Length: 342
Length: 131
Image 1 (tube, chains in turn purple, brown):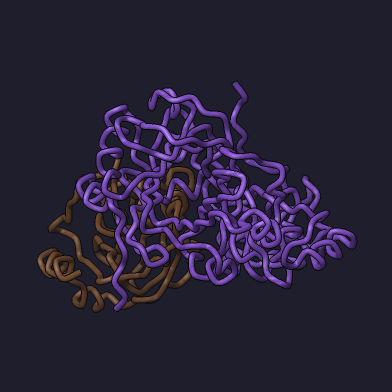
Image 2 (tube, rainbow over the protein chains, first blue to last red; image 1 turned 180 degrees about the horizontal axis):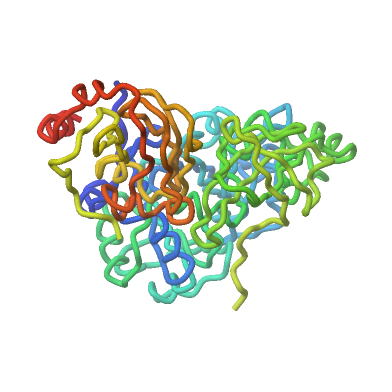
């Protein structure tokens, strides 16, 4: 039996009575009280997630900028030091090895935050990087009140080193919930102290269950669901994160596909009939569901699916095979949820 | 609100965490506190059709939580005499009141002798301790 890895906050989760489940080799909290309550806390006040399972790769000097420009899809020339960018690591077929955030620390210095399940394939595709995942704990504090509860001001997709609630952190204006907020990277030994201080500010502990329903409402892709080495970013609606005017791995495939139009596209849909769509369910006429849930905020069954391009227009009715039962759904504009600008 | 953990003594239990309240040749069935707790917040109940046949140890419907879907396993065989229609609009009743308002279906038993093969509450609690 494989031993599950634990984050530095494992004891805190257990003490809070979290339901701990295996997730890509880690024992992680899926919920503390209820997915719905935690989801709504992030939409209305503030929640904190332990995402210390995520991986970190470091590239410093020696032409790091040019090296990453040739391997990541987005254009790193569009960000300067202390800025972050969502980008994709692609393969020769134009498929997605991983999606990640690149933090530019200096002209030739980067920290990449990657999916826990992809640290090894990422490192194989970026052999010059150093895997520094063990040096970092990561907490995401998200919600309309997240920043004020921590007493920090921060623009989206910027970051800096700062002491937060007495702990030295890398503070980044990033997240995966569709809300304002930040991600706090710190030394693993300091993580329990930081976690306790955040909870003392009335921030609600939230598990990976709510993280998934939140990102789905915001239509953020999840690797292994919407994106994979077998699907291209053009199909997945991530062309905006691909600078097709520069050279990177697989760019030729993506340029050709963009020109011709992909055969299938990723769409958002709501169920018209009863039932909840789930990953892998076939769509009649070609395609399949990549994610689905009952949206705790919209209180409606929602999902994402790849469908034939001819079916991809909002308003189109599709039929999904819910374990042998044909059920109607309607394609809608992405995302399901967008926070109000303040 | 989720219910407190309980396992009523008057019910019969099946190893797939179903309960049955047998009255004459009709059994009211549902899922136990343990099952609803393991599932989390139930958001959908996919019932069988009234009049259809269910077989002991086989799936007769589904319940879904936010995260996952689970088959419902029939503790006894027979015909579906009634479906708890109230759950279609309020599936969370299964979490709130698993032995009362959260009942799922009533089965008109075709094999009443099967009842003797179900567990009593002590045997079921023992099973839970071994989980």
